[in-house]
Length: 266
Image (cartoon, rainbow, N blue to C red; front, top):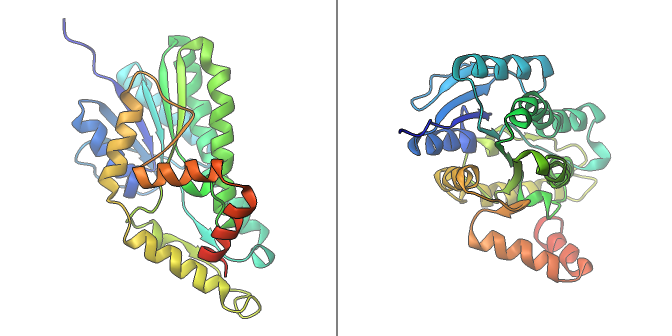
């Protein structure tokens, strides 16, 4: 008897890590649906238009997949973007939009799919967080806040869902070479007041990103987390980032903070 193919829904899968996840899952024999605002044609999946900040839109996307396939086994939440600038000068509207996409966008997608997964007593939720959620980056404060919130959200969600066979994990990429870098919304306001530290910090981060990991490696890791039998609450992609996150847990917080200052705030 042939095993029924798993069905995945990926948010923000039109480019970058999300697209890499779509391709990797498809290559593993998973039927993949992708939702994002941008209208795209996918070689390895079915695109459904949807905005993660719109709760009703996420409910419509989930209902469409369920009507077509009868099940959703995997939800991968990749949609997100970044802003940079000094906290003092960041407009509150920009900070709220950062959280609305990166954090509440995940909340909307998860809420839409959870009733189905809970009733089936089966499902895997993979949330793309960031190493910046474990190691807060100055002048990208609200991005770090959004990713730290995701780590806490997943940690709590896992225990809420434990009796129902639904598992969740947060994957923390480090520097990945994608269009995310060019799409970052940068505010230089206050750079003179902060003695050029805003622009130096962002420039250093963008260099690290442009020379970072191939998104295909991130897609393959997400696939592994989506399909393996058990998953941890959080995990980093790549040995160097795993070691880095582990060090931040072992070393004194004051020392970690000072090293981050030397790298991204001096």
